[in-house]
Every structure is written in C-alpha cells, then in structure tokens.
Image (tube, rainbow, N blue to C red; front, side, top):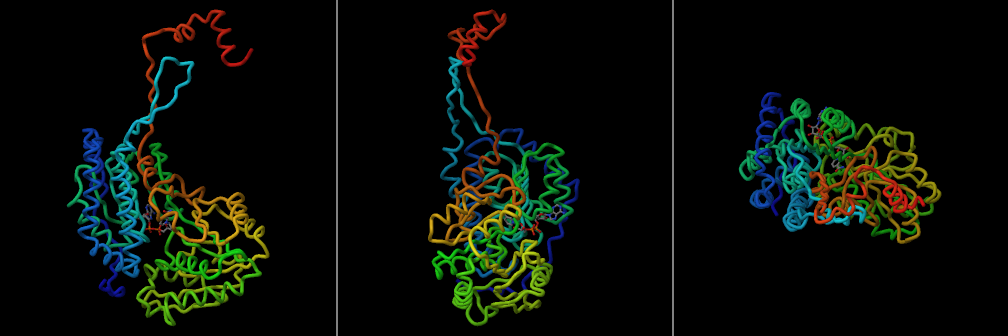
Length: 480
Ligand code: NAD
C-alpha cells in the first residue's frame, strides 16, 4: 500500500455553518420522514446498510488517507482501526437483521390463561449520533448502523477535530444514503449545542465525560434515552504469572496503537514488584522491536492529534522519571513511546486519562494491593489482565468492575463485533455493537393477547370480589 505523508496535511477544526434554524429544519424533515413509516420497512433498512457498505468499499482509500491526515496515524492503523471495524459492524448487521427484527415469544403466566405474549422492537424515532476524533469514522458509522438497522432516522455529527474525515462523511453520506432520513451536520460546539436543544428520541454520544454530562442534561429535558460511550483511566494488571514477552507485546500494541489515543487502551500498568525489572526490560525491548531505534522515523508510529492534546500530554510528563523514551517534538506532534517508573499515584499524570503514548508503571507488592488500587478509583471503561494463572484472573474479575475486560490482550473486546461494548458509571452507560446496537436504538415493546374463547380466568378476576375469588387468590398466591 502507498504511504502518505502524515505531516503538514492537517486542517484546522471544522467551522460548522449550520445555524440553529437550519438544524431545527433538518430535525423536522427527519421527523416528517419517520412519521411516514418509511424507515420501519426492513427492505429500506437493508438497502441503507448496503449503501453504507458500498460507500466504504468504493471510497476506502480516501477514508484511510483522511484518517491519516486527521490523526497522524499510520495507514495500516487507519484501515484496521476505523474502516475495517466499521465494515465488520455493517456486515454483522446485514447478516443478522432479519433475525433480530423477529418478535420474541414469551411464556405468559398461567393465571392469565388463555393468552400469548411476545416482544417486538419498535424504532425510537429521530436519533442523534455525536462522534469524537480518535476513531472519527468508526465512531460515526457503528452507532449509525444500529440506528438505521433499528429503523430510525438519524442525524450524524462527526467530530470537528477530524476535519478530513468529517468532510468525507458529509460528502458521501448524502450520495449513498436516503437524504430524507439521514443527515450530517458538521461543526463544533455551536452545532452540537443547537442539536442538543432539539427533541431527539435517542442520543448516542461518544467522547469525554465532561461533555457526556452536558449531553445527559440536555437529554433529561425531554426524557430522551442515551448511550454515553465515555473514557477514563483503564488499568492493566501485570502479574508475576504473565507470559512475559507475549504479554509485553500485547500490552505495547494496545497502548501505542493510534499513539495511545484509544478509549480502551491501558492507561497505566500495575506490575507485581517481583517482576517489575524484567517487565521494564522486556517492554523497552518490545518498543524497539515495534518502532526501531528512532520511532520518530518509523512509518508505523502515529502522532498526537493536535497541539492542544500534545501540550496536555507533555505537561503530564513533568517531574516524572523516564525509563524509556520521553523525547517530544511539537513541530511534528511527536511523543516518543514512553515508559515511566516510580510514578506517584497522587501526580497529575494519575488523575486524568492520558490519551497518549505514555505508560506509567506502578509496582505493587501483590495482586491484592493492585485490586485495592483500582477499586479506590472511578470504574474504568476497560481493564487488561496479563497472567497465565486462571485463579488470578478469576480473583481480578470477581473483585473489580469495568466496562469490559481484555485478558492477555488489549482493546479487543471493543473491536470485536457482537461483543457488548460500553462503560460503567463514569466510563459510560449502555452497551452496543452487533445486535446490541440494534437494541440500543429500539424500544422493546411487550404484547399480550388474551383469547376470548373462554371467560374462565376473567370470571375469577372481575368484580364483584366474592368470597370464593378471595379464597382462590389466596390459594394461588400461597397465602394459605
Ligand atoms: P471530541 O473533542 O471530538 O468531542 C466529542 C464530540 O463532542 C464532538 O462531536 C464535539 O463536537 C462534541 N462537543 C465537544 N464539546 C462540546 C460541548 N461543550 N457541548 C456539546 N458538544 C460538545 O472528542 P473527545 O471528547 O476529546 O474524545 C476523546 C474522549 O472520548 C476520551 O475520553 C475517550 O476515552 C473517549 N472515547 C470513548 C469511546 C468509547 O467508545 N467509550 C470511544 C472513543 C473515545
């Protein structure tokens, strides 16, 4: 595959042009479409999903170039992290949709004999997808697959911090998809704020927790349901029973992929003291194996998205003890793959999500201490466990919580279609991917139909409530 230059191609953030009135008109148009029931039709849904698939297939090269320009990512990571994951999600939906829409039968209580019950999934209506910059295509496409698969209209708001990708989404979505049901609004805070002032039937937001709270507040005004896909500090447990070299490679891949700008990336490592030194040596060796002697020259090593985030991450390095790396170059938005040791849990580095290629290593005497360390902090989006010991694995799984867990790997549970993905507490609410995306954008409606060929039960529950009815009710409820 050809290479593209990842420097000097970046654009400033998108300055949206849509006014509050434009946005209100877009939402109204979509609501009118929804009310025609056009989007309920399974063939319409399938057609839209196939159109999304065709859009990615026919323009994948433009998309991966755009992703590379926006994020400074290697092409391979643009392809695997965004385009490939989005394609997978669409394929899973196309394959599963006809099954997912089927009514699900239930067993009604015999007390309501003769009756039959089932659930059906109703589309919610007009929905909103707000995406961040770190996987700016995948995180636009994946929720949209759920919205469309479930029969909704959708407004897509790409991140202004990924302007090339945002521009392509705004260019191609109208060419491939039904413009009466799917709209793209480009822009920044002004446009997102105007969107949030509208009444949506579901909002799917991916990004940081500060804005997550703004979204939740706006949604509360209309009692709109939300998915909040947030972030936080994801711990990695590295025990004395980890398979050293394999575990270091998996951990380094998870951490340094997309330059550490992955929501599920291990943020910091809790390593058992007895293996701290071999771990550090192995990690240093692994970084060299991945990116060579000078990672700045490696075509396989990404960059920080912009100067704001570059300076934020560099500030976190202040007063830290570097074991590997530590060099930075603002003109290239480059931060060397960096491993820090003797990190104080009270340092600023340990208070916020790093979202960069910096790996703090904290040595702990034992697993118990590591568990207590994690439990004393906000519930993370993801957790990595590196061990060959199933007992240790079970102990961590039982004693801690997280949105999802990657054992002897990283990021994989979020990249595998069909595996539920979402946070817990401050790292998010709701899950999606595969069938769950479809369910996130649906209302599960319960239906019960009572037969009319006998009045047996009705006679027992209708007034007047005579003595024999009381006795029967008491008998059936076990009160006697
Ligand atoms: P971002 O800056 O692109 O913001 C996300 C969206 O919020 C954008 O569309 C933006 O327009 C909108 N926004 C920003 N400020 C706003 C405001 N004041 N009011 C209304 N809307 C506003 O992306 P980000 O938040 O920097 O993304 C990185 C964060 O997202 C990290 O914390 C990361 O962990 C998290 N993340 C989570 C997931 C997940 O699936 N759980 C995935 C990717 C990223």
